Length: 85
Image: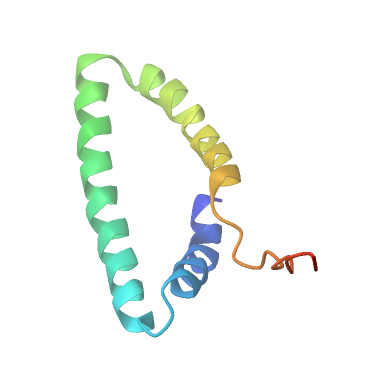
């Protein structure tokens, strides 16, 4: 379910920095693979210290981080013309 939003995130990032589409795509894919590996390692360590059920319960709340998307800038905000004096 989280991976379904990945293409939209790449397009959003490409709109933030126009003209650098290849660079942005490479950075996002590299970061996704790298952070995914680090996350798997951390969750594996937690599963060793705690038990797998506790890690599953922890992962249950991770999608709530997506609520932070409310604070992303609006790229298509209409410019308000200054009032004539």
